[in-house]
Length: 340
Image (cartoon, rainbow, N blue to C red; front, side, top):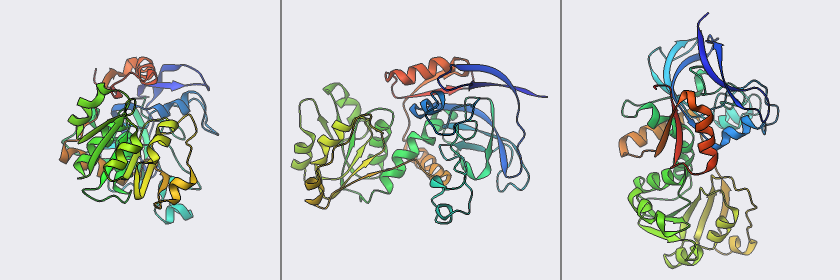
């Protein structure tokens, strides 16, 4: 039997282990993907630390996959061997529950498959993936460029295009990190008037390079006051995992403005009711996207030049790559490449 390398977690809180496994065979409706790169996302903590209910071990983490179709199972259409594909958080769905019948596959009520949690993910050389979870990668993107767009990319892109803002509207991106640096680029390329909000003046040059017209240093300026002076934001895309920072930006929303949360804060987000009522403002969350949304993200990024800023590690250094991601010091995404 053919063998492959995989990095697995054998128990909740256990180490990342480099092991040898049998190359899996795709079943009906499945595709085997030869993985070329995989992003290391903070959500991989859910697998490593056992924070997801019902998680079964051993499990291979990773939901930012870029690779090539290696073999297709029975009744798979339209995928063929040799095609470049990506896999994100959405790893499959039942297709018949009320959520799926409305197209909300990400919130399947029967068998929601999260890549790297419900099924083995991208910390391995080959993975078997439900065919409905695949997104086509355009030729203009390398595997390392495409991988982080399968989660961080689709999350920010999809949130922005579904938030109700129109070209020319004032859109603020809160935080310049793994999500925020992509959010600024996507917002600028979509034609929004982009404001970047972060702590300290050291990020201003980068923010403007990424596409922000205005920079707000939250250490020296009050984000709500500054946004209000600009007429109020139609949208604040909250990528920073800081509830207090989100609260501080709420007052800067314009009439019908929206605070859209894509970064999960550790501390509570405090929302004064009066702030929402005055001006019909709102707070909402956004979670990733379907496989077709990922495909749209990749296509848009390729055509407009949006690129993730990555630190690349060889697959053999998966534990180091994970630790680097966890440190918060990476600029800005960590990606493992199978091509050493």
